[in-house]
Image (cartoon, rainbow, N blue to C red):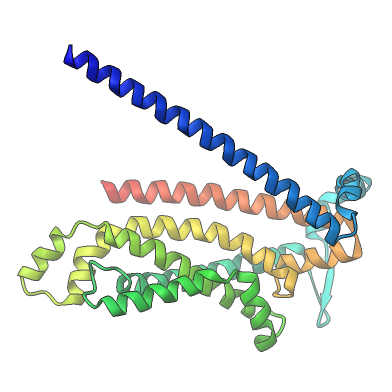
Length: 294
């Protein structure tokens, strides 16, 4: 009888918790709806009613781009291979700027991966005894992650000028903060038995990190690094909008000129490139982690 009463009590408590969850969910949805409506009204007032008036025209510009691309016929597929832009007397195809964008992502990812790995070790509470040093390092990673790449790039453009260096430094800085945060969490979840064994054998701190921690966390580091590379390819393309070079800068130029066929060709190149990188990096992550596990 007592077991039946206990089961009934648990069922009643579960029903109460489920009813409370539904109420809270409903209230949250109502709150979000109110905030959405309020935000639209504030935006309408700030933009003199242009938002709602422009909604019926939201597909006009994409349709114009597609129609211009369609009007090119089979010549559309030759756009990425043709010489489109002259700079310093030298003409380049869109593939040149695509490679430049990928190079920006590669260099910034390598820099961010290296610095992020080094900083993450200092930011790991189980590896560093000084709580002050860990706290200061973690606050640096917070600052590095707090600023979007485009904000950093806008600042660096005034220092380096409108070139890919500004984009590489901006992306590398943000990548360092993001990866060091993820790496430090992986480090703190590492099994400390190897560390303790090396410590008992008289190993130095650097030896304990190198032989006791790095072999455990390396597969996850690689996985996060490849994932970040995918993100950095997109970021490299976006930073072109502020004049930091790459394919994004060409994209902005033709958006300003309203050359729909070129815009469509650049979008297609970016989509195919990012998709290919996503597939290859996913394959590499699974293959690497699988080999490491064996």
